[in-house]
Length: 355
Image (cartoon, rainbow, N blue to C red; front, side):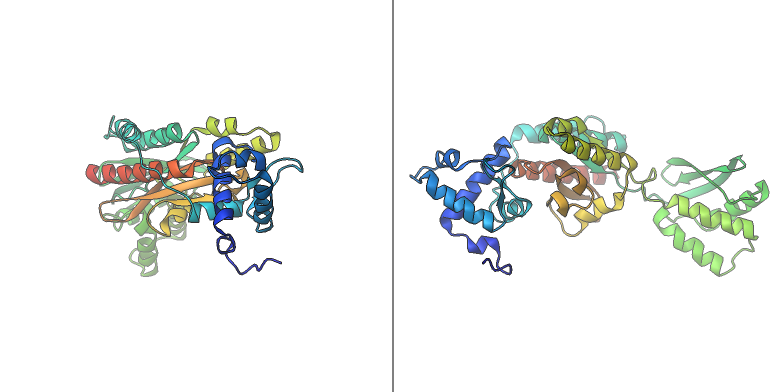
């Protein structure tokens, strides 16, 4: 009986490791279950199909291989893919052609950050035949001016003017009973304290000022400030954006109706930008490229997909966003990892140079 405390890699001898590596590489290339007879043809030394079949049975008992059908060949399980990526994956070098494609796509026009990041997502999709993802950085420019504008009884507009000249307009639902006078009072209060502070800082600044009674706000104006700040800091608003390109590549990779339904669920999640913060958190646990397979990835486990993701940093070496590729679990990880890594480095460098 297998000891669950042992690492499956430690339980494999040289032959079983070679059979396992060859099977996984064949599966990642073809996407089809691999049989013992097919596998025996790939070895330079003479290993019978019967011997390979016995090794495959041992690997299946270790939880590294599975069979989609009774009479079919074997495919790696999620545990098997994890073992392969961690212990056996050979990372290829980015070719000069691919490197130049990424550079030329990204360097077209650097004046518009959003367009540049959109192109990064597009080139990731094109080179990987998966879906390219980019989490755009939050706007960290200091606030210069705030204005509230009443649109109707239950709708109001907050206008944010940043120190770098950027202007953001956001519609929200104000507390009931607001008057033009209370809106002006709220705006005056904010403008007296927000200058020089970023959106991520201002919540604490406002809370401190309200607590210290710097200004005597009436109850409606104070509620206006509190509710307005909740709107500004909402994850998924304009200052934090997820860009996805290449969804059709994933749809083409699916055959069964159930797979297609899961992929469509993925797209729905992305369109709603649900749990956006988790995407960046996936990359923040350490520098470099990280690989999430199937259910390891909280964001995309419903689609049965894998995510290869890397953070990008500003000139202060602070993580401000992430780029990645999502595709089927049989991604060509050895090729995708250097593509994602180089794109992340290039995005970080271009954003730092621009600033």
